[in-house]
Image (cartoon, rainbow, N blue to C red; front, top):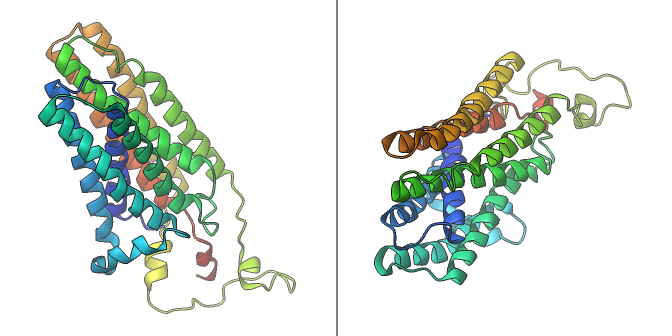
Length: 304
């Protein structure tokens, strides 16, 4: 599949934003602190930028509103509806924290539930596609959810350090979450690279009973939408190298930086290490999302 930059930005930023908003909704940070107010605003900004970037991939963005009407059958439509509905408790929670220095637990928990449901629907847009074997697995929503939770906790850790300087109350718990996230992704990659194709030229054409089917001539002389969007190929050796880089720079190095926050003893070094962990994790997730699309193969390419 073609790894469109807009979709990579969408899934990366919105995942981090929903993860952060979800943790804030549980009350891990006191609402009256300035750092909490900043993080509430940051969560809404990340979510908004992510959702807006997703419209850039549409052929006719002005018709995006029509996607909301198919929520009974479409995961894309469900995601859109939930994204809008979830903005209500998230905005209310941000308002209460920023202007009234308080939080209503019920509002926060409703927002957290909405964040989880929205990220799940985003993942199911891909996991529900039987025509793409790589995505059609329970590991796809599991990875999306755990990556969102990990990124959100990492950013929330900045809030505790900004307020208490030497606090690692949220930094150290993020280390096992990092291991869990990349562990799930490693399982996803192992499944992908050992996955036999369930769709072959024989099954795609229905001519398997006659014998082996081979391509005699391309259906089209020039590239078309299908070949551009679904015919992207990345060499296996390059994909393996990129996946290792994503794990190292998005998982191992952030975990080491989180460990250093406990040794630094507070102040600017602690904040620097936590910020570095957040930044590198975000870059690692962006690479992971690029591979998520680049390594996927649509069954329609059997015709090409």
